[in-house]
Image (cartoon, rainbow, N blue to C red; front, side, top):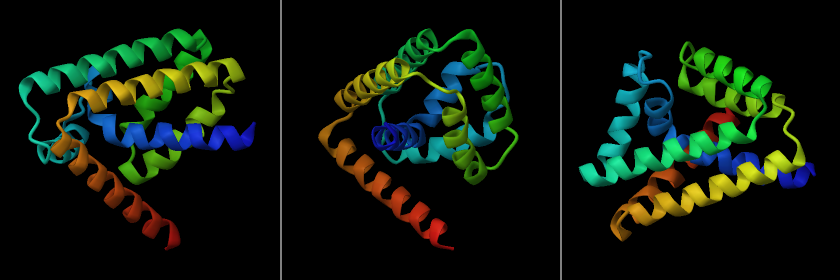
Length: 156
């Protein structure tokens, strides 16, 4: 099962890196997220999203969040909420590593993992449908740059 868990975690991490600004906005609108939001807004600004696209992506992220919350137990939800609050108090590099640990610490059942993977796969497909072909290509390039940057950091 560990072999199957790694692609799931890698997919979640990748998607989280791309969708973090939307997650933060959808999950904690009353919390101070100015720094994180500004950091990711710069990346999204490169895509020149229309207002309609931004609204669609926000709705997709909200729906995904709600669906994942429905899969988790109340204890897992509380643990995840505490981790997100902690995430806001740390730098992005530390938070990335912490995100992996948080999901691993939730002790998800195989059924939960499968449901979350299906939800994330649907989210990815829905998000891809929002982007124009040029935006999809640019997003793929941004993702490759992100991967290269993190691989280089891992070697240091």
